[in-house]
Length: 147
Image 1 (tube, rainbow, N blue to C red):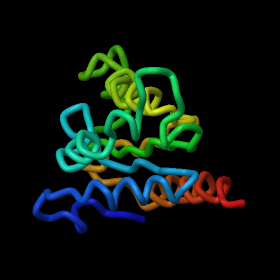
Image 2: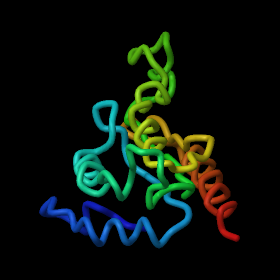
Image 3: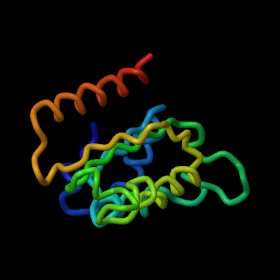
Image 4: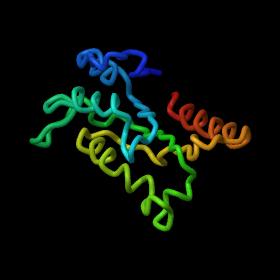
């Protein structure tokens, strides 16, 4: 677990350290709350600084330093799941709203794992049962990568 907000409370990203962490792991779980239909501010800043041309992605089709690494997207939302439907208040699914994030991972040549992990309605409180179910499913997913 690597908490960007605990590591960089001043928002001064250590690019070399972050790139080394990514390089050292075969499976990367990008876990973040959905913040205005996107990633959280520090996470976005980290993407902007760490995912550099020539390291995280290339323009000539050659392999990046991230090529083939498995990526898991794990998000939480403040509102319930029914808000993230074409009929709901957001008029779109969470997958649609986060498609730019998936495009970034594709550009960086990650092997994006399905399904995207989603926990909805955190601002309204989750029942103990819902929280336990989500935690169990998440733990099982993470354990499936330990080999």
